[in-house]
Structures are given as structure tokens and as C-alpha cells.
Length: 199
Image (tube, rainbow, N blue to C red; front, side, top):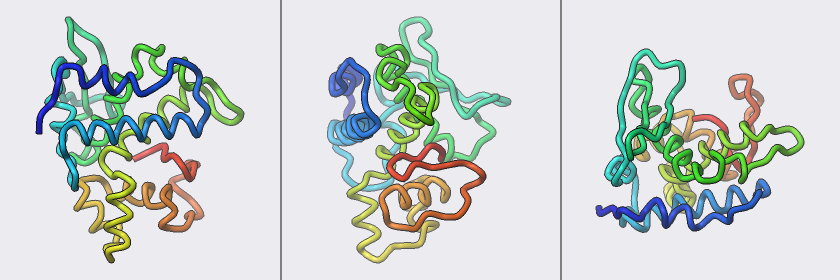
């Protein structure tokens, strides 16, 4: 696996500098995740965290207690991603990818330019939902999940272990890909079929 100093620039260049519709945001976000996997020549799960941590000018720290799952700051010429050490490793992995999407979107007003408010969603909600979607696309690529599912592996726990994610994240991804039915309740939160908003 190799990474390049211009990987982040390449991924940012895939997104037009304008407000995106919901469908456009999903499309370009998935395109970025797929391009990153192609750049590092990863073609099967689990995707190693090093696809992000191995990038130049990315530093990952863990802190406890932390009021959130993660945070990102530009400090002294590098991006510092802080993860909540009190959360399970699979959740930290997901948060890492989520925070990395914030890094990608940083030139666009932290994503506010790309994801303006829409009926039913604030700009901040769209930003966070899109970051979750990037993490889902990176660690659970559509083609890989469908291949595993159609190959007979349909137990979310087995799939979660194979892809290195939480069972909840896998269940949401399966729902988003139309492989399972909409549950009646999801922890009191609403999930958009095309884009999960939590791991």
C-alpha cells in the first residue's frame, strides 16, 4: 500500500466547488472513497486504517475522556485527528474516516458551501451525514458488500467482522444498499435510505 503527498488534493479535485444536491453529494462522496481505495490498491476487506493514517501530514491521537467520537484540527502544518479512546476500536476506525472527510471538505467552508440546508436538514446535519457516508463507502464499499451478500454471507455480525466495522454500521449499510428492510426503530434516529447518518 502506497500513499502520496498529493492524495488529498486528488480526492478534493473530484468535487465541484459549488452547492451540491443530496444525490450529487452522495455521488461525489462515494467517488472519493472509491478513488482512495484505488490509489492505495486495496481491493478486499478489511480496509486498513493506514489508508488514512499513512498519508503525509495526517496525525492521529487518542484521548479520553472526549465529548465526541472525534475531532479534527489543522495544527502546525498537519491535520490532527483526535479519536475517542473510550470507544470500541471499530467505532474509532469509523470515526477516523468520518473525520478524514472533514479534512477533505475543509477548503469548502468545512463543507458548508457544498451542503447547504435543505428542507428537513440543516447544513450541519448534511455535513455530518456526508462524513458518515464517506466512512461507510470507504470501509464497506457497495460492490464488496453486495458481492459478500450475494455470495451467501448475510449475517450482519459475520459481515461486520469481515469488514472491520460495528454491527450497527453494517446493519445501516445493508439497509442503505437495499439489502435489508427498514426497521421500525433505529435508536430513535431517522436514517435516510441512501445515506446512513450514524455508525
